[in-house]
Length: 287
Image (cartoon, rainbow, N blue to C red):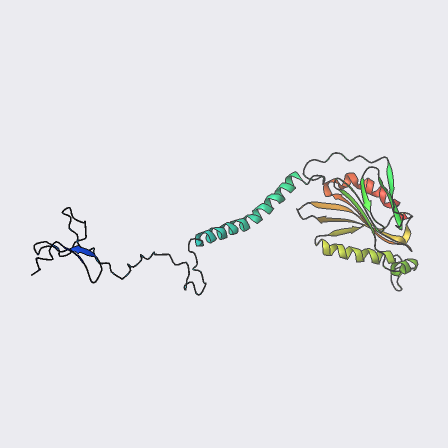
């Protein structure tokens, strides 16, 4: 039972220090905040809990396989299809290489390489009327070639090219070995008609067989007016793209040089170019 003397007076809560007005017992709430109701009464504010509300945890997708401490990232499964597609593309490209090579070979066979004289019908060869002389200041040999043709070379090596025609000469004398045997009459016990140049010619021919397995030769004896210092043969071989080359191989031997000469062209042009080769070969000699 509340004392009627304190009803209507303001009091201070000894626990929370909030001010309130003592109401009669008929009121619904024992404590109301000051000025909270329309009648001017007040009640205590709701008591706050000392416990802080828990924060909402954000669900983060784990990017690590064994946790951030290990530093091992989880393997992404999205990249696996891309890797498979790249492997398939690589296999397709590898499989296309033989087809591409076959296509290039067919193109070269039917159309021909520019400047090689193959494929298209070659123009009728005309014998040149003027010649230039090849020979460097330090070279031991010289020869004549058609004027206007592309010629290049150094001291011991020369080359002339025109269309499918290629003429090369190389001085491969090593020390004085071939120079000494070139002065001799031949090996004792062998036939008189065999000379040192014949052995050199066979030796160089064996090297060409190693380079071109299908290399074949027919012996054409010697050049006129050169005696036992020359050896001539006619040869044929196949190129990488299936074409055929034909020409003369000439070996010359004297005290100054051991000269290996190749005069060749496409096989279907050989009969037309043959007179030029026969005219050029006697011009190879010492300076």
